[in-house]
Image (cartoon, rainbow, N blue to C red):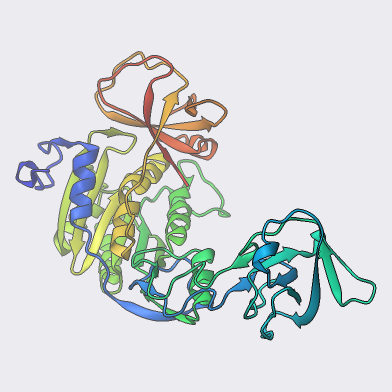
Length: 417
């Protein structure tokens, strides 16, 4: 993107509409990766972001071991893949956590899953394909035997020196288990971002309060808290504040002293009651964008001191869509996550688009996986106030500006998960 062509004077009337691609690239280029780290125990590592590669200093497993309960056998060369009944004398019993004795040719050791393969053994047979003598000192098997069956070799899972987890990975349960398997008890991770929130609008009240004429319940507050919690952010939530310039200044000042990022919804347009924009400009620097997209044309970005600022649209669907498309990758990059961009999936539209629209649209759709490729069905009401549409939908379908198509068109789909 050629940044010199972008007008960041915050004059909404003269500012050109940015494409979604240019707006996202501008935002991501401004995202400064968090460098603050701390060490956490494995029990506290879920959803944290690794600050360094994790390299194994042992092999896993550290010894050849049995893949099942059965018998470790020291096969003689003439017994390999021979049809008919074979007999082996039982000379040892090896449990997990113990070490057996050297096994002589033609002998067997009772062995259990995970137990070390004894010296001299070269295969393991399942207990289901052999029979123990009445005296318990011999087994016989009717199955032809091959070398190295049911043996998990040293380093089968992890080789010493290998990188098992990469820097920038957001840790899942299986990642934590893998770290534990090489003896790691704690991990160095990036500290969670501290994100400040507040909401303006005298019409907004909290759920549980009595709704008066002209008032609405503040759904954006709870949407943003949930979305930021999913991203493992520390949240400073000032809630609803008075819809005036002074209160907005105080809220921004309070959060800027303590937060890495401030997010608001609404108040960044050019109306007389839009106080967030002038308040941010007084305390810091603001770039106000009008994005060539629907829903969610207005989006503000700037800084107050060391805190980044993102102002989302006020309509609930617009707020959630722009958070997903812009704020979420911005936050993920800031957190140090390596794969921070939303990844689209090609799917076919299960509807016609007969009238070209001047803005790129991200419509709410539900995916049908029974077709190949999967097909996306359109929610009938696409207004930015229809919050039920984003509950019904499982993703967003990207429709380029000035385009028309018939059912079956392949388009980019972004799962909301």
